[in-house]
Amino acid sequence: MSNVNEQTIMGLIMAGGNAKSEAFEAIQAAKNSDFDAATSHLKAADEALVTAHNVQTDLLTAEANGAHADVSLLLVHAQDHLMNAITFRDLAGEVVAIYQRLAANTTVANETL
Image (cartoon, rainbow, N blue to C red):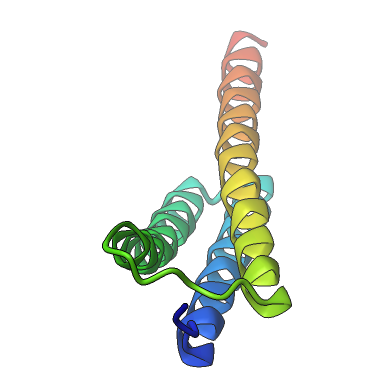
């Protein structure tokens, strides 16, 4: 059994937190019709998730190679935090798309008046 480094676990938590924060910022930007900023925040969220995915891949590779990790409450928390961030990022993308559609429909409606 190997002990997963707390720094690795905290890296997962931070990457998840950063992704969720960026996704939230994307929604706020879209709410204010700043779709360039929204897109930028979604991209930043994706980059944070890639970082976390790379850490997960390293952990899974080690596990597959026989270095079985001790599962701590902190590691479970990190995984939970990351999964919530992934879900929130997916939903944020949908919310941004809805705001974009509403803005486009409002523009078309105003042009026909």
